Amino acid sequence: MPLPDFHVSEPFTLGIELEMQVVNPPAMT
Figure 1: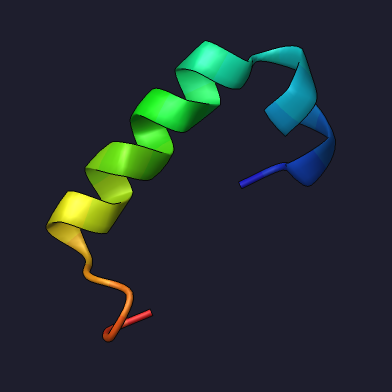
Figure 2: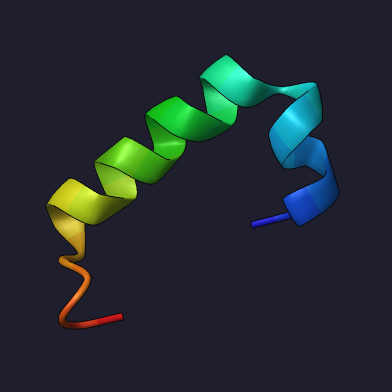
């Protein structure tokens, strides 16, 4: 996940991040 783009596409990145957390719990990461 591109960190610089995080601020550029905040809503999009946040949505993906939330999905990632749901699919892959922090414990697995």
